[in-house]
Amino acid sequence: MAEIRTDIVIIGAGIAGLWTYRHLKSLGYDVLLLEREAIGAGQTLASQGIIHSGLKYAFAGQINELARSISAMPDLWRAALKGQGPVDLSAARMNAESQILLVPSGLMGGLVKLVTKKVLGGRVREIPKTEWPADIKASGFKGSLIYMDEPVLDVSSVIKALAGDIRLSADPLATLKDHGITAQKIIVTAAGSNADIAAKQGHDNGLATQKRPLLMGMLKPAPFELYAHLVGTSDKPVATITTHKREDGTLVWYLGGGVAERAKESNPQEVIDAARAGFKKYLPGIDLSAVEWGTLPIDRVEGKSDKDGWMPDTPTIHSAGDMLYCWPTKLTFSPLLSKRIAEILAEENIKPSGVTNDWSFLPEAPFAKGPWETDQWS
Ligand SMILES: Cc1cc2nc3c(=O)[nH]c(=O)nc-3n(C[C@H](O)[C@H](O)[C@H](O)COP(=O)(O)OP(=O)(O)OC[C@H]3O[C@@H](n4cnc5c(N)ncnc54)[C@H](O)[C@@H]3O)c2cc1C
Image 1 (cartoon, rainbow, N blue to C red):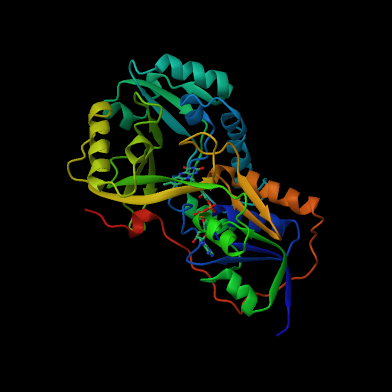
Image 2 (tube, rainbow, N blue to C red):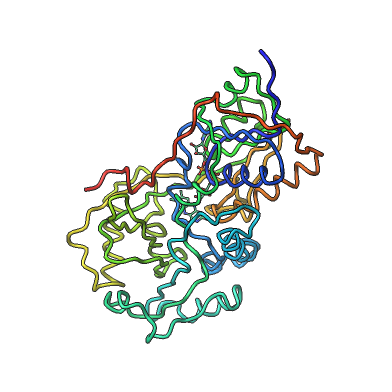
């Protein structure tokens, strides 16, 4: 069997693998990206697509490196969406230019304003009542509306803009062996499988990862389009609400935040009850009597944080042998992850070899669908 030399193999076509694929290709590397199921199938298409500005973390008392480093991300993503970033996302769309923070009357409004001003400067501002969207006015919400400079991506369009020649393989390392494919570097962006792959390769010494479970809520048809954090009394929002359009045109509210922060095995009714109670209390004008509900159990997978229950402040990379095991921590951070990967390649003097391989002998990977398309509704 003839050997096939390539520069880079990436394992896992979530946002981390896809952004890195595009970035490294733009630097001239020959790259093979292998996905075991479907493009975006893991956390990426199940995410809410929010490009965080750090406000959420600042609000939870995490005025730290995380809040600061994340505040540069909205501008970086907007540039990419205009075709001016490290990768070209001009074919992708945003679902919303910005988000709003719904702060109920008397609920830490002053603190929110102080924290947001301190950490994020001009990136947040209160929206005068005269400018409130009609749907919010009609929802019966009482309190303050704060504009947040946090774009919300149509993630499906983002992964389509990033994807190129992505190939399917149930077992990427076996595929490499079977076809005699060797690479200068193998980059593993397989989220929950990173640790298993590292263990099989004897690369797990010093590798530290964590999973934080969610039981996400969904309701359809959504009363109106909304992209908001609804603040309550705890350090997590009562709900983070994003709106997604199903292929049949129905709008879905996808609910994260407090309503979703529970064990994946919890009774789905707990999510529905928490969402109903939150909406009844803070948005009493919304009629949810005829909606259908769905839930999605899913883990957030990231490098291990030294703060219990929190995510790390940056992307995490574990380097062993000729492999890099990578977690972006947030979709928002994938550009930082891929920048760091490119730096590591440069530090290790791994340069584009000039080869261009044709991978069409391997099966093509399909695109995954958002959870609101596939899950059970009741
Ligand atoms: C419910 C939810 C909401 C979120 N909302 C946001 C948000 O609004 N904003 C934000 O910034 N972040 C958000 N996140 C976090 C964000 O989604 C993740 O940090 C990010 O998607 C991780 O990307 P990834 O590419 O590392 O992993 P994944 O998206 O999980 O991709 C891993 C890929 O690897 C593939 N794979 C696995 N094993 C193998 C294998 N052995 N061989 C080949 N392929 C393999 C999988 O099929 C998958 O396609 C959210 C996460 C969740 C769970």
